[in-house]
Image (tube, rainbow, N blue to C red):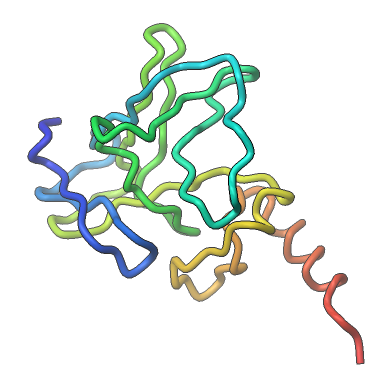
Length: 154
C-alpha cells in the first residue's frame, strides 16, 4: 500500500469518503487506520460530530482523528467491501479488501456500532436493505425489532 493508492474526496454516503486509485484484490491491505492508542474512552461528543476513535480491544481505543490517518475517511456501509483488521502484536489496524475493489470505488467498512450507539448515527449507504442506522451486521435484526416496536401505533 502506498499513500497514492487511495484518495479522500466528497462521498455520496457522507462527508469525505476514501476511494481506490487502483484495483485491490480480496485480502489485500488498502490503507492503515493510524492513530494514538489510549486506555481511556473518547470524551462524550455531540452525536452530530465526526468520530474517528475505535475500541480495538476491551479498554483500548485508537484515536484516528489525525490528518496522518488515511483510513479515517472510510465510510460505513451495510454491505462493505473492506474490513478493519486489528493486529494486537504490533498495535496496528488496516483496512483490508473483503471483495475485489475497482479503481474509483468508495472503500467502506462496517463500523460495528452497538444498537444504543446506532440510534445517534444514521446510515446513508443506500443499500436496499439498509436499516437506516449505523449498526454492526449481527445486530441489525435486533435493531429492526426495536424500531418496529418503538414506532407510534395507529
